[in-house]
Length: 212
Image (tube, rainbow, N blue to C red; front, side, top):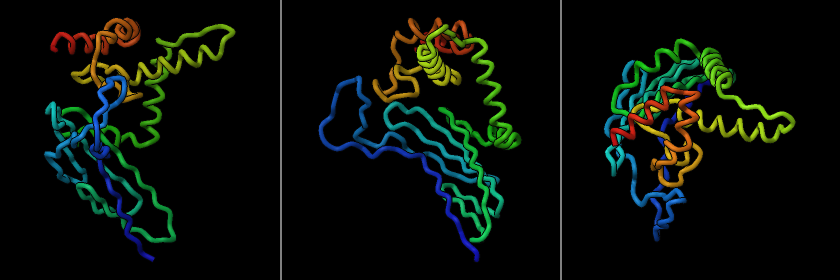
């Protein structure tokens, strides 16, 4: 029996908060208005291209999405239709490029699509292996301390490994407190670590601070 599967792609955003505003900066404050305004939504050669602008600061955000499946697809900007039968397994791969810019990211998908899932896993494994060769810390006789240190190092790495024109916010990628603001803590505490492990990211942080 034939079936149509609808694949909906949306950038999730929390609904605006109602009621009084908690001004404690240590908490992530849910805004009282929509934070992203859509500026473009088109489909080109089977790739959906989306662009937004943040409501207050005017920062751009771009995304490109490509679907590859074992059955025929009809792409759309927000909904892709997959035609299949109910008695056969379906393989679906969604590949996404996301960047804080207003440029077209369709070309950025060509490399990941050519590599495929297995190739991306291998590339990620090689990247992390190179990071640990230069950043790992060992403590003899205290495996709990080693685990805590490595977890912290991983958090620092994932928050600073891709910084196009930006810096590392106070909570990195692990929390919404301070609403993504940057503080001098970045230069005092994080910069020495990056100077030893990721000099390119350390240089970007300094460029960002100088520009601001």
